[in-house]
Image (cartoon, rainbow, N blue to C red; front, side, top):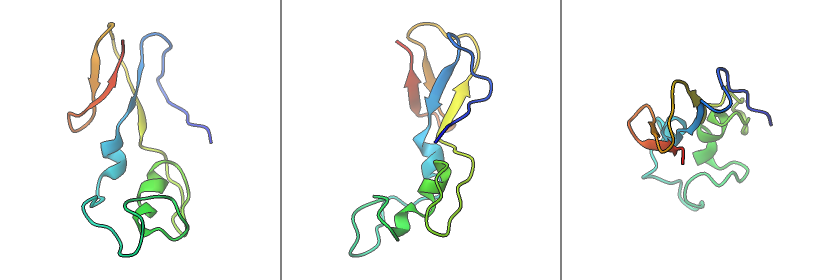
Length: 95
């Protein structure tokens, strides 16, 4: 699987992995009875129905959509600068 990141510039851009975007709308406090906790990507694992398509992967009857995990944080970045996701969570740090 290839992921294309529009606007990436070597040496200045930071690739951000924002898990909150993938889990948006997912109730991680519940689990289907008699299944492993969370999405384990087993066939017919209902917790994967919304998560895997957001990673750009088709799952069961759910087609893949454009991945939402990785984005590019543009702008001037200096060593040690932290990047924050849409919800303010620390998602990347350049060292």
